[in-house]
Length: 138
Ligand SMILES: [Zn+2]
Ligand SMILES: [Zn+2]
Image 1 (spheres, rainbow, N blue to C red):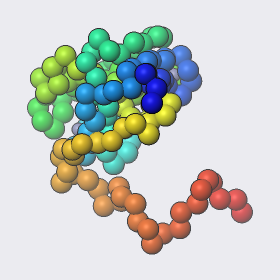
Image 2: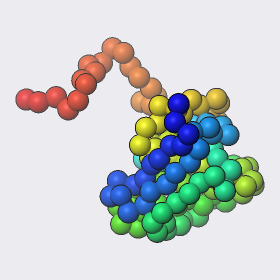
Image 3: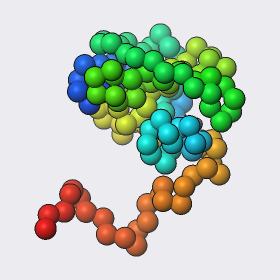
Image 4: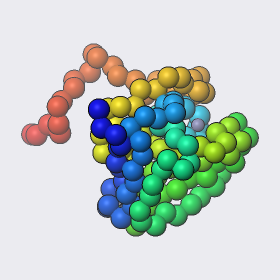
């Protein structure tokens, strides 16, 4: 098992390093998380703020989440990839790393799901539809 994990945005301007051991991992299906990711859920790896080492310039945007807490997102100003979230009320002193931005996210094992009732019906794996290993041709 590696000592640390690395990740970053799509264009490579922002890179980060975190310990392999995360404090927690969770999924959230609230509407704001769906907006911010464009996906059915936000999956986050949670770390103490000081454990996240960042290179490159992050932009910030803050919004009020469904919980009523103010959430701040950090993203790359060049390619727009959302990388981190912070929510000082619900996750004091912690930084949430958006799981998909890890170079290898296989270590992320969500322990709980919040706003579970918000999960859209399409956000799940339907084994009855075709699954291609890549983009099919023709
Ligand atoms: Zn970028
Ligand atoms: Zn959420």
